[in-house]
Amino acid sequence: MKKFDLCKLCVIVFGALLAVQSVIAEPIYHEISYPKGDGPFPAVVLLHTSGGFKTVRGQVRKYASAGYAVYAPDFFKRHGITKSNRFETWTTYRTQIEQELVEIIGLMKVDPKVDPTNLYAVGFSNGGYWASFLAAKQYVNASSSHYGVWSFPQHNGYPADYFDTNSNPVLALHGDLDSIQKPRFVYRQLKKTASKSPKFEQFIFDKAGHSWDCVRCKKDGYDQQVSDKALEMTLSFFEKYRKPH
Image 1 (cartoon, one colour):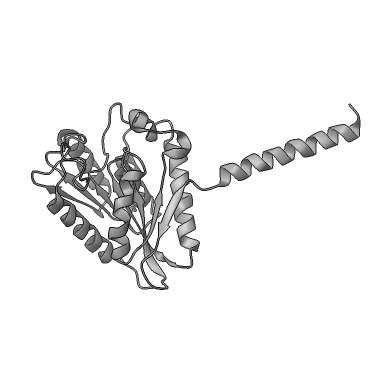
Image 2 (cartoon, one colour; image 1 turned 180 degrees about the vertical axis):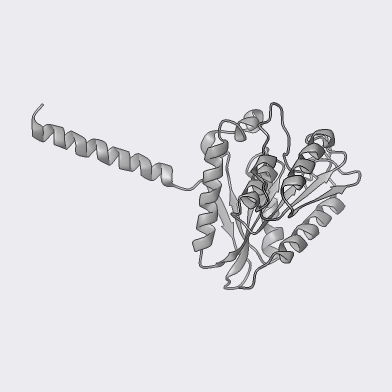
């Protein structure tokens, strides 16, 4: 092969690598909603359940109505995760999803309609795991985990292992009749987390199950009163850690 041809080939290969890198650098799919007004607003990232991205869309209005800019990422789509292989969220793809959610936080920080000093996270079930990660590692001011994942078959110790004495506040909300994230396993993890992080708080709802805010999930524990209370407690928790703008 002529020297000229070799150089030309190198340029083509290098260009292809840049193109691949550009594709990989794209943030994961996400939707953004703002309250009325110009901002900048405090912002919350909403993290969906193992039922997929559709399960978080109903939450957006609640937080936007409370005055938050809302970022809702789909952390399943890129990796082909579904309810049937949901455990791969925390095993096979854990470190990739960590980075992808950190990238979403980066987008929030440079959004002119967002107050970058006041970022929060709320996660539901699967998403509760990731909301805990974001606060434990100080990417957001505070997080709230609603019926979150704290234990799973052959678990690797997370999310409790994310926490240390420097972790930002997390509010873990759980039901004592949760049939999916069962209390006898979850409570041990909550105790472990509390022993590591002085800013960790928990509240156990009496006679509450899983998916308390999902109307279609009556068999899992839909309860409008618990849902309303969980939202109220979350907003109050965030307000407690609001920084002056």
